[in-house]
Every structure is written in C-alpha cells, then in structure tokens.
Amino acid sequence: MPREAATPRHTGPSMASFTLHGIPVSRGISIGRAHLLTPAALDVKHYLVPEEQVEAEVKRLQHAIAEVHRGLQALWTELPKDAPTELGAFIDVHALILSDPMISEAPLDIIRSRHYNAEWALVTQIDELSAQFDEIEDEYLRERKHDIQQVAERVLKVLMGTALAIAPVAADGEQALPSMIVVAHDISPADMLAFRDRSFAGFVTDVGGQNSHTAIVARSLDIPAAVGMSQASRLIEQDDWVIIDGDAGVVICNPSQLVLEQYRARQAAMTKARKRLLKLKKTPAVTKDGTAITLLANIELPDDCPAALDAGANGVGLFRSEFLFMGRGATVLKVPGEDEQFEQYRKAVVAMKGRPVTIRTLDVGADKPLDTTEHTALNPALGLRAIRYCLAEPQLFLTQLRAILRASSFGKVRILIPMLAHAFEIDQTLSMIEQAKLQLRDEGVKYDEAVEVGAMIEIPAAALALPMFVKRMDFLSIGTNDLIQYTLAIDRVDYEVAHLYNPLHPAVLMLIAQTIAVGQKAGLDVAVCGEMAGDVKLTRLLLGMGLREFSMHPAQLLAVKQEILNSDLAAITSRTRRILRSFEPNEIATAVEQLQSL
Ligand code: PEP
Ligand code: MG
Picture 1 (cartoon, helix red, strand yellow):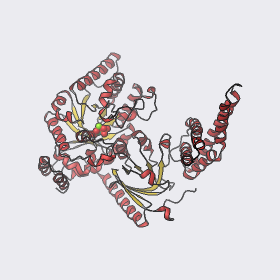
Picture 2 (cartoon, helix red, strand yellow; picture 1 turned 30 degrees about the vertical axis):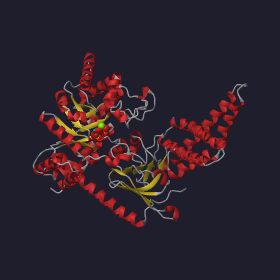
Picture 3 (cartoon, rainbow, N blue to C red; picture 1 turned 90 degrees about the vertical axis):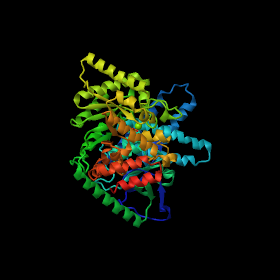
C-alpha cells in the first residue's frame, strides 16, 4: 500500500464521518491518520524509519527471520532419537509458519509502505492475522493463532538484539508523511513516555481521566490528546483520517472537507498564538502591581530540562523521579541503582544551571506501578503508594536518598516527599534522610548539608493537619491532582467518574486556600505542582488565594505567565475571598470565569 499525500481523500461509504466526545487532556488540534495500537504493539518499540533506511530495516527483519529458521533447524538436528513425535511436529509447524508469506513477506511490505520499524511491522501483521484467526469457527484451527504468536515472539527476540541506530522521523517532518494519531484502548504512563520522540501527533484512548498520569505525560509532550473516548479503538479504523480537538475533548473521524478546513484554520491560528507567547520567555513573571511570581517546571526525565529552560522556568518544582523506575522490565535488577539514579539527578541539576531542582522521591503505585510490584491491591490509589511504599522498602528508599543527596553537591536540590499523612511518616522519612547523610559523611562523599525537605500536600488529612507539617518541613507543594481525587473520592484514572472530578468544588478550594495561608504564615514557601497550576483559567484564582509559586509542564508556562502579567492582585484577591465563602458550585464557576475579565 503506497503512502498517500498528506491530505485526506473521501472515497465512499466506508469513510463515514462521525464524532466522539471524551475528556480533553492536552491542548491543541491535531489532524492525521489513525494508527491503532493493540496491547501487543505497545510492548515493542515503534518509530518511523527514514526513507533511506527502509531497505536496511527490511533486511534486519529478513535476517531475524533467517536466524529463527536456523535456530529451528538446529533444534531439529539436536532432537534426541527418543523425543516425542509431537516435539518434531511442533518444530515443523513453526518452520512452516515462518516460511508463510503472511509472516515472511507481509511485514516487509508494511516497513516499505508505512515506514514502521521491523518490530512494529511484525506485531501489526500478527495482530491482523490473530484477528482473522479469532473469526474461524473450527476450534483447532483457531488455536493455531498461538503458534503464530510464538513464532513472532522468536523473531522479536532476535530483533531486540539488532536494533539499528535510527533517528525516528517526526511524522509531520521533512518527509511530508501524514501525521500519525495513536488510537489505543489504554496507554500506560511508561508507554506514553516512550512516545517522546514525537513520531506521533496525537493520542486517543478509550479509557483514562484528565489527571491520570498518562494524560499528564501527554500534556508534558505538548501533543493534543483526548481520553475516555469509550469505543474509539473499536470504531476508528487503521488509517482513518482523524481530527483531535484537544481543547474540547472531541475526536472527528473522517471529517468532511469543510470541517477539515475549519480545523486547519484554527490549528494555524493556535500555532501563531503560541509563537507570540515565546516573546515572553525572558520577561519576569510579575503582576500588574509588581508582585513577583515564581514559575517552575514539572519534569519526568532530565531530558525535559531544556524545554523548561526554553520556557523561561525559574527551576524545577517537581521532578517525578518514578519515571526513571518505570518501563524497565520485570526483574528487580532493573530498578536503577544508586549510581544510575545519581547520574540522572545530576544531569537535571547541571542542566538547570544553578536554578533549584525539586526531586520528588519515588511515587509509585496506583496508576504508576513498578514493573517489579505485584498489582493485587483492590484500591491501589489507597494502597501501598508513594512514601508508604518507600518506607516499606527502606533499602530502595535509602538508595534513592543517597543518590539525590550526592546530586545536591552539583547545584540547589530540594527533596519533596509524596503522599504524607502521618507525623510518624514524616519523622521516619527525616530520619532516613539523616541516615543517608551520615553514611555519605562517613564515606567522605560530598552533599549539601542544608538540603531542604518538603512535603506534598495531597491528602485531605495533610491539608487539615497542616501544623504537623509546618513544624517539621522546609517547604510545601500542593498536589492538587491527588488532593481532588482523595477529597472527592474519585479515582482520577476512571473515566466513568471523570465528570465528578472538579477542581472548583468548595471543599477542594477550601483545602488549597487553607494550605497556602497556614504554610505562608509559618514562613514556608508553598507551591502548587498539580495540574491546576498550569491551567490558565485558574491562574487568577490561585493568585487570589495568595499563591506565589506555580509548578507546571513547560508547555503551559508562558501562557500562565501571560495571565500573571495581566493580573491585578488587589482586585483578584478581594473577589477570591468572596468565592471562597460560597458553597454554590454555579456561583463559584461563574465568579472564577469573571476573574478573567478583572
Ligand atoms: C499531584 O498529585 O497533584 C501531583 C503533582 O502528583 P502526581 O500527579 O504525580 O500524583
Ligand atoms: Mg500526587
């Protein structure tokens, strides 16, 4: 199937246009071809191969297939004479499958026509075949699907060891390939992170909530995305033309020419507006009446630091260190050791050129399981998550603390602890930090003795018992994503209750405002590092509550800065006080909207 020009063509009744409504997670408009990803496809790397390397990629797959052939032949010859006949038959079947053009040739065509890398091409073809086998009535034949999958796994194993150093092609890059929009039932946060090479122009998933970590990573990649699309992966077909309206949470499949033109015009206007924002990079974030606001970046990996600097961030307010631990395979050995972690933390600290870097200790659990942990908890968001997990695994925690402390001798580092609720958890954490310092001191390893330790305020109990934290901690950072989840008892990942996830619920506002006021009164820096901090519609509300430190994904930072530059604190503060006295949701929503025009 030759690749077509990057413009949709409508060719008949199968191209019927339809619209899906879901949850917006990442801004902007994306227009491109649908690429359906099955769970199997998510397990392999997928990237686009540049034109000039297509034939090398084809050869890589051919060699892998030949290698598996040789392996099967060797198995045959090594079979003991008394081996059961089924064993020989099984090898024969695998060899036959491997020689079938459906396996030995069709994936090569996929590499040539779609520019998929070899692993992805093979898995795409196997998925297609598996679906055909599922339709077969004869049970015996239907079960042969597993043989095909096993053969594919043999080939994939060989491929894994022979990956070429290929720079992925940006989908809408120089080669004028149509943009690719990933459509999947679900994507884990770790898988989403693997898309950071920007081969894809948008994401659509059946499930997920606005503040699930998958959504957060999509936002950090600054790629339009919509989740909670219910049946998207069933209704949208491979190569359908798709528009994602990431602001509205709408997906239009096979749009008419008129709709397409409208969206293209909006897309162009948005790109222009974003370019204009770049002018603000060096402008200090100061309100109209002269109050300086600190704008920090949320990062997942040290490689995000250049984007943070490009957006003019004053530092890193949240380094989600757990992303260093994810997507590494299933063995305990795959957890990064102290030196590996240290290198990553140091890289971020050095990249930020003297600006503070706030490293949050491992926040695994809930929708960010470690590959090594068993997923048995009935309510993982209420289970052994974040600091609870770390305190239950002291060796792992100590290793991380030592690595962070070592990085603190290369620049200003702050340690941030997630999910604290109890005084004894704070005390145990602080004593673990002391233990790590003592060890390093004994070993003569340098670290910053004055490293600050802060708490995430993201459990209602913490917000309500703030004096307990204020006494023990150097700074606070409000994790609104979890604070909303736990205050309203709504799983932030569950799209069925996503409509109940409301940052403007009076209980949520009360907890945030109270945390800011009590923390600041005690002389502590208080930041918000949840997604509320990057939502321009809420910037004035948070300023009105007294917030002076915002931490968000770099992609949102300049838009928030623009809002700050246009804000008059005196007017906003008195209006916000009124909002905080209200218990009427509609009244609150309207008043927050009106803040925009003050
Ligand atoms: C939060 O809960 O608001 C937060 C910033 O942490 P995370 O989203 O990683 O749970
Ligand atoms: Mg959190």
